[in-house]
Length: 160
Image 1: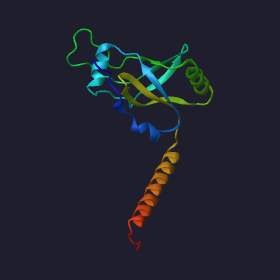
Image 2: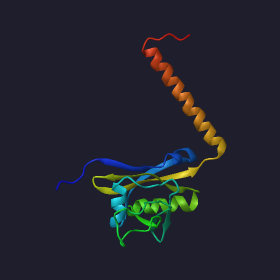
Image 3: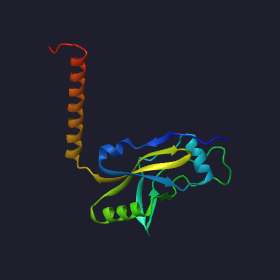
Image 4: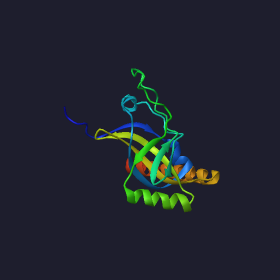
């Protein structure tokens, strides 16, 4: 039996990029139980309420909802249990330093399978204020309008 290749997205946290300014992104492995893997392969998970914490030199993922596997038996998992993340020691030390002093938060951006292994993209992020969110939206809209104008110009349309 051949091993899976590539990246299969399971869940994405689009709201995180709006609510936080992302400083750095880390790829972390997940410690899962068997029925959790089957539920993820079915494409069922919610990470919008998720966050990560560093405790005793280990990183733990909280608030991620992986629903109970439909065909599971008494061996099914708890949907909102705390899950351990697998990171390198130097990455964990960096996260400890930033979260203790700088007011940073660890937010999951996406949950996916990479070459058959469950992974999560974990962002080191700072919360945005309301006016920062508005400014980011206006910058994005201005960028879209300029791209649209450049595209119209390249296609030979006149600006009236």
